[in-house]
Image 1 (cartoon, helix red, strand yellow):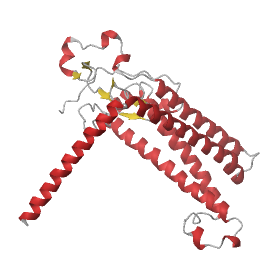
Image 2: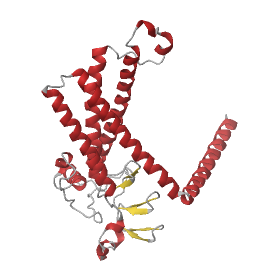
Image 3: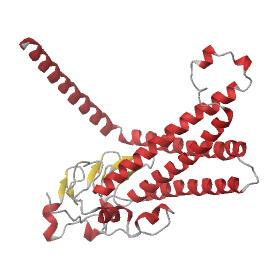
Image 4: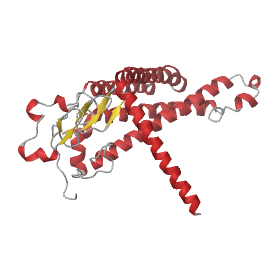
Length: 302
């Protein structure tokens, strides 16, 4: 038993050393090739996102919708309106989130330095070699300090932080709404064609496809329904996770930190701005934030 414990302890120590060395190699490689990684990762992610949204939009409204509704009916026209509205909101929030400069360098020059009473709250960034406000952290991909950094989003090709988190939340909301709308259409189409159980890969081997002329069509729409279900669950889960952090006034970087929780109403206003949930109707709705990202009120429980 003692020998087993010694062996297990040695194995754990070896695993920690290997992980540490692998992390060092990764950081060294990333530091040397950061521009190449960013130059490949961001365009690929953006092109993939736009192609996915475009293909789903065309498939749902041009192929699925005419098959389940009357092309001259009010439901068909309303679905087209909601589809276009949702896609415009997705692209609008994505565009504004991408163009937002949420770095410390975007502040006014006089706000890039702490006032006398707040100097102890700021911390020093060894990479940027300057003091940065509380809740600001350096991003290795952007190579700059971000105000209230939440995480780096490759689809936005930008860091999600103080100035563009509202756009990221609205982006996830409309992605969830649009994929949910498509899921309903695909569900109706699969129900009408009795194709829910057709997308089992084993059926391609075991089933005699010559006895069912519509088998390939059923298999296709059933597979797309499963893909649509996955594309619905992912943004919904991300949106719920983000809203939980907004409710607690925490971030992905400091997920367990609740020292800035000042009540759910105030927390939501800190992220969504003065108009709060109205920003989900359109990315062009002005909703000023109550702070510039350098001053954060802490609760009394520390």
